[in-house]
Amino acid sequence: MNLEQRIETFGAEKIFIAVFIVFGVMILFMRPPYQLMDEINHLPRVWQISEGVFLSPTMTIRDFAGLGDLQARKIFCLDEAPADAWDDKVYVAEIPVSFLPDNFITDPNHKHYVHAFAAKDVQAFLSTPLNAEEHEPIQIPNTGVYPPLTYLPQAAVAFIGRALNLNAGIIFYLMGLSGLLFVAACVWWSMKFLPEAKPLIFLLAMMPMFLVEAASTSADAVTFGVCLLGAAWLLSLRNSTARLSRAQIVWLVVLSIMLACCKSVYGTILLLYFLIPRERVKHFWTLGAALLLLNLFLLAAWSWLSVSMSGVELYTNYYLGCTDRNIAAQKLFVMEHPTAFIAAMMNSFAEQWVGYIAHFIGIWGFLWNVMLSPWFYISYGLTIIFFALSNCLSFRLDERALLIFAATVSAIAFFLVHYLKWSAVGGELVGGIQGRYFIPIALMMFCALSVFPPMRHKNLIALAAGVFSGVVMLWTNYLAFY
Image (tube, rainbow, N blue to C red; front, side, top):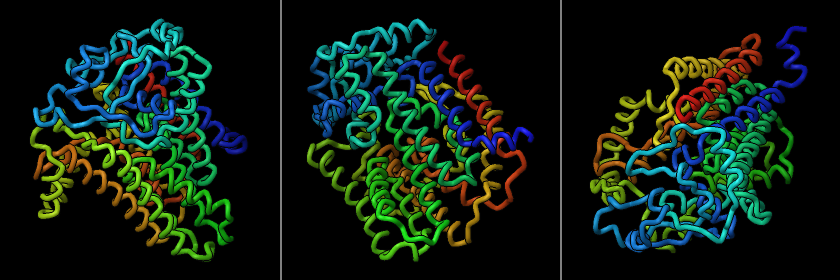
């Protein structure tokens, strides 16, 4: 029996998930706290939710600035906001000062990030008492709008850690570990639901960007896990003609709810429901419409509660001093010139596609300053494409069209959102797009490419590529911060 046969007999998914967890734990402890884009704003939202504060409190920029020269001002400040924005409300949260050691705090004004990080810094953080009563306010303008379920595993651990009065560092790393284990469970079940695509799913999960976000307090952990699992499960439901059970219908409802709690643009994953054979569902079209409407209703309801009722303006570059950003004016421009938006989206792809691919595979750090070698992006990207072409999934032409349509609608949606929020009015480029936004729709995109029979030694090759990716990720992280 050769090595490939031994892997298959033992269960490739067992080895894959073990590798994923091992490298996830290593990057969790090797990456300095808050040296991940927006993590310094995600953790306060997690803590807030763990205290039962589901709707984030608000404060005007002027009132926050009047609190004095607090440590929180170093984390996120809107001092460059135009004069007419200083009375606008932003979301705020309070967290224990123990979560904010001076050597971990980032400063967006002075472009600071952690240097010369060492094991002793982790040890010191792990031994720091919580002192929950000593807290500071933090502005969270871009994460205060996120629903509570987006941070479910991390918030649950924060609640338990506070109840047990664990040290601050222990709670922090347990929150990251909870996100990692949640995503690991999603990856595991995705491979169980789509055994033909196990190597492809593993390679996607072992992308440095996927793994770093999974082992963090970021909302991307739940978003990546739920979207991957949801797409894999819906694709698996097309492989049978037996009637859906009540439990499966309940899980479809749960999926609709969870996707609504992820970024709104990923609700298109529910369109894969329409790949299920119609004979499996008694009221096929009614249930499909109900799932989509439930998703849209929850999105609208949460937006009304968290934005409209609180009187908060959605966070844009305007608050960072870019006065050519204006959501209302941009909406009017898009309605009057829809082709201009399409042109801006195409221009962005044409000019920034290399950056999108690199960020999709792996660029992290508070300032996106941790980059891998170009040869790694090329080799790992080609490996994923090769496995996508030969993932052994069989689709009809109309099924491929639906997969591509669902992924395309999501992509257009987040380009539109970023054109409204982060781009100059009437601009020729869409600003703020990050390659990691494509990760939740990646399985749909790559499964649609399946045309060739599976390669020989697929599990062994995928395992070698995944381990190599993990080693490169850790080494790159070491060079950046140590």
